Length: 162
Image 1 (cartoon, helix red, strand yellow):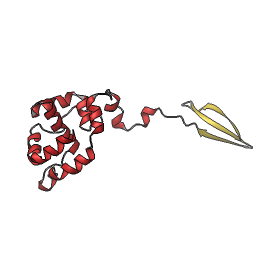
Image 2: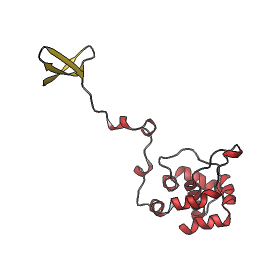
Image 3: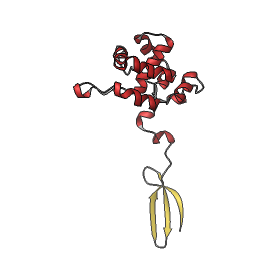
């Protein structure tokens, strides 16, 4: 089967014309979509943090070495969702543990750790964010409630991992 490409129609779209004895068959040519069109809509304008930061940064290295799944298993019973009492679902354990670690490591107040988290892509990556966030995921006063829920044993379970 032989064919050729020609421009056809009012819009001048390229079509592939197949020659068969006594029959012409027109089929529109399919063009390859640019890679940007294949991404989900929300990812088009938001670059992944791992593409923006230096992966050799100490917090990035530490985030790769920490056993986040083990921490989640150990701490999740102490951080239940409050949906049964009309509250919202619990935030990710990695976010809570990461914020508490950063607060402890840099000796900051609850408000200061949340402010710096909002400005620092390394801190956001450390706490499990995939794209840069411009809004706080929680209220700074929530850190106090999380510390109370965790208790001394929970905080000790968090910090020896580091």
